[in-house]
Length: 191
Image (cartoon, rainbow, N blue to C red; front, side, top):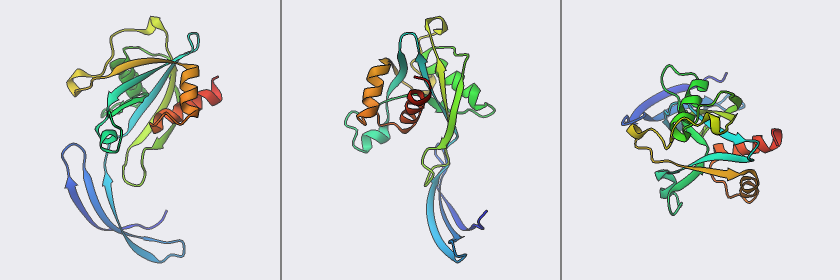
């Protein structure tokens, strides 16, 4: 492992999750040390779950307002994405995935299949997201979903057919990275 020398760390914000500004040195490929600077947002790890119904040939997605997308040109600010959320302290990724599906979609899932895990934006965010795919059917429905009310979530649940989702994926109309990854995985390995 490369020898990294942290020369300074300044907390820019600690309002919800820490945002820190680092100055550090790291060796290049020839071993020479070079000073660098980087802002790092310390966001907890997360989960994302794509639910599919093989019989009906449908997926369940969430639609919710995402301020960062609005600030970056998404006119309405709404994003259609897989069910997702942060892993609570003391939870495993599997436990968090099951909880998030229940909170956001209203389903109690049993057969959870891990696709993998990825950094959401390794250049500036610590978050590592665990990706899952799970089957659903009407017998698993236990509640309304719509998100955790105490967290201010206001989620619309969308049931979208396989063909429509595939076409949107092909056209580049799916603009959420975790959703692209799990859909590609589904169409490569499940269909």
